[in-house]
Amino acid sequence: MHSWAGALFSSVCSGVLLTLSFPKAGHPLVAWVALVPLLVAVSREPVPRRAFSLGLVTGLVHFGGTLYWIAQVMVEYGGLALAVAWGVHALLIGYLALYPALFALIISVMCRRLGPVGLLYAPAVWVTTELARIYLFTGFPWELLGYSQTPVLPIAQVASVVGVLGLSTLVALVNGAVAFVVTTEGPRRWRVLGATVVLVLASAAFGGWRIQTGTLQRAGTRLRVATVQGNIAQSDKWDPSLRDSILTTYIDLTRHAAGQGAQLIIWPEAATPFAFESDVVRSNAVRAVARETGTHLLIGSTVISQDGDLRYYNAAVMIDDRGGTAGVYHKQHLVPFGEYVPLRRLLFFVSPLVEAVGDFSAGAGPRTLPLSGHAVSTAICYEIIYPELVRALVANGSNLLTTVTNDAWYGRTAAPYQHFQQATMRAIEQGRYLVRAANTGISGVIDPYGRVMVSTPLFETRVITADVRLLEDFTLYARVGDVLAYACVVLTGAVLWVTGRRRRGGPIQDMEEM
Image (cartoon, rainbow, N blue to C red; front, side):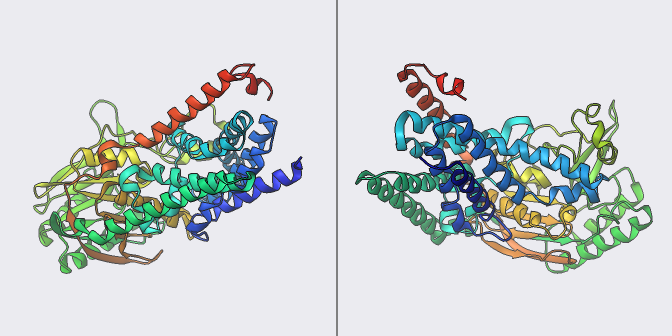
């Protein structure tokens, strides 16, 4: 018999190790064993509700450590009292912790029915919960397990075949195999471990081959791009007295980028301190610099639509080299409590936050923007962490990925590093160059293999330029999407159903014993 205190300690260890798998203090190697303490404890826990509690503890520690910066944002920019902000933060962390808790519960049930073999279903169960986290209640897929491997480039190339969720599957598979070795005796444990090692080595070999061939660096049409990092303090962005000086900063940086040969110059999210086209004089100044430099400008701004109801959009506007509007992209996936407040009337206890948040409307469908006979796409801020959203843009013809963001909210916390890491994964998945423009950093250019070609430090005014290529070929992941992840859902459900039917009490007996 194991002690409950020991099991709790193991679940805390897994939470800490998961946190240490991600930036900025973590290391990707930690992820390969992060789930092992929890899996071992859960496999030995005969009571499902206690297994659920162990997973909940792991989730609380993990998400609390990874997303510690959210409360600070609500205090500084949402106007909430410190105690209220931490209360709201605790509710979010508690919700996210339900996913590891569900994972632990299901593994516990499987181990009761199948013995330690149940641990080998850990990758299918884990990815099932991650897929749910992407889509349920608008989704919050921040730092899925697979993102931990973004810096390990040979392994990260697996995402070009099966996406970030496929990487989560691989990492969870190793965790399950190690837990199986720890809890099992006899030669079969070494066979399982050996097969797992072979799979990891084969994945690394594929990734090394993909990088070495480098075909995507020679395909397509070359384009020189630039990002301008205005480094405008969040407290200054909407000060009416600073509108002209902010606009002058971006125009001067644009001229500098054009002088370096840039053909496409990208401004960050909400770079203009006014709603584009609603302020004709300042909008014309932007158009004039595009004509003067002969460049295309992709600028983050607010757009107001007065067709029928008055609507506000977080948008990206493509200005062509003649100063005309070539296209507008409206952000599709809005941030709850950042760009709109769900259930406004019920959330009376966060009234300062409700008053501080603008009521933006969501854009419709994947929309690309024209660029000299090609198509480019942009994902605005939070959108870049949604694999399927970016995949839809590529399917709609995008030859180049861009993302514009304003990470000034997060200060010097881990958030800008985590956000940049997740954006990098989209380049690998889709086999596209990705250009990121961030108000205060990190801005950068990433090649289709996830290599950072150039990037900026935080909180510095910078211009960076790089040569990218407008690509047309599709990766396997771009073609088929998250087939592996949905197969994990089917496998998880099938195992629970089949093993449940074999038990005398039927498939609901385990739940009744909770």
